[in-house]
Image (cartoon, rainbow, N blue to C red; front, side, top):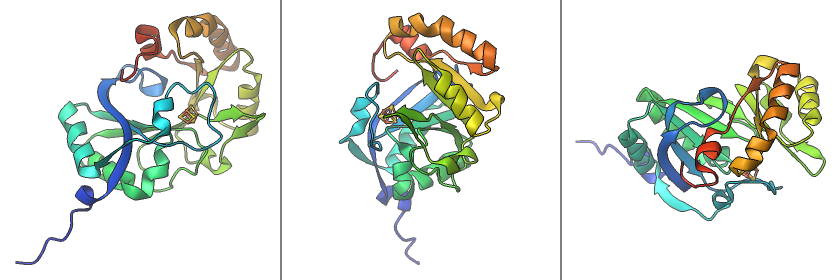
Length: 220
Ligand code: SF4
């Protein structure tokens, strides 16, 4: 009998920050039950307002096979793969995990900042959330056509977001705007302003439900 060879799902390793079953709290998939896989490591410059600093690393190493097993055990039909910056681990095993999940009928949704190039082979739904840092957008322009939609967190002056959308010729229907705030009260304070900004620009409005409900609790 011939040797079936090494199983790549077993031998490729991902560095992860956390995994849990919850509900997608923001963006176009809001409200859907989902498994979350948060991969470790991000791309400098790191955002001073980041509410997932625990994903900056170091994380825990887990085989692609074990990650897949845990996601399937959750029983959700949606898997949100986030970070940190998930695409840093595309070649080291994320590509295999995506293929496996899709083959099992699970919808894969990515959350990326767009600081790195989104792999052209990635088949999941790519939500890109560009970051404005140190007076400039930390963003790869090639992602204009690689992302499926764009999501922005806005603080007090959203004009630079409207300018980004215009400069990059993004369709309004592909843009979601959310209030910045790692705490419930910070988000509440900005809701009305974000609402008006969306009405004026015909953008989609999004809450951050997990923050409104659980404040800054981890793993929800
Ligand atoms: S890109 Fe996202 S994960 Fe990385 S530092 Fe910024 S907010 Fe945090």
